[in-house]
Image (cartoon, rainbow, N blue to C red):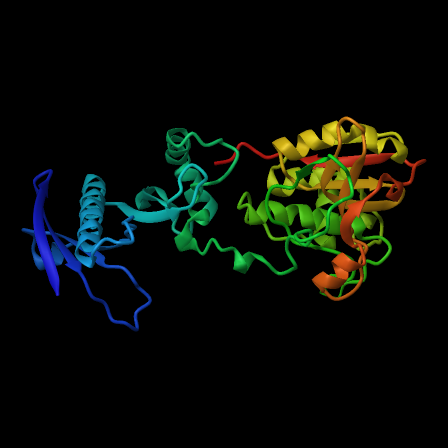
Length: 379
């Protein structure tokens, strides 16, 4: 069945037809809005279709009739807004997107309208996101949200499949469920967000003995992907080497070699591939790492990104620290890329490939560089 109403905007008669039922075999699970320009010959007739998606918050004891009324009120408002946006610019295509953001206990629905005449025929998702940048900034300001998280990007909407399962190809968040660190009276400063665990010998590629920093870099990039800061694919070793040669930091013979890379190389790669800047924390000896606990804690409190630690011919990924500021006692949450084996979470945790470590893990005579990626101003 259907219902219809008429409105007039800019002397254009519009017929709104709500299709209340669709074929159960159809992937469309919401009603459609059909807008037709009247008083035109059949050859001049313009039709457009919009999907609607309504969220109505009702008390659990409300009757079905009251719930239906609430849904229809929301639907009516959406139809009115969609039609007004389209009539104001017939080359636009308004769409409804649903977002889960920290400022609201319930999902927020947003209508974005992209002027299709200004888009390239094969424009990328990034170009569309750039087009909507000013609208997103206003949404952040209205919701008092910081401008360093992509809360209202289309790629983060529920309709885009933001459960992120299609982005994940490895074990994620392998530190979850670990036992206590052993620091009495300590405070934990941890990574903020999900990541994938990259380690030796994955993808049937033999990098045992030289690829630990490459794997740590892949874990860092996975964090930015899963937080939707980038859609860049995880680079393999060869892509990483080619990028460093392109930047002029390595010679051509570096490509295809088994040469190590360090923290400064990671900063170059992150900046080139993701546009992400990083700070480097230089520590003259492994024995001095605990004395830098305050700086590391500040990083996790303000940035929340994983850290690559390079020194003593080894690289680790640092996911957090547990630090007692009064006593100076500290433990380091280490994700070890040197693991070789199946992606078995129990083995990885039980054998200490991801776990809380004392400072004795680090070579006390070797210097260490920490690559600390910074969250970009990105919304």
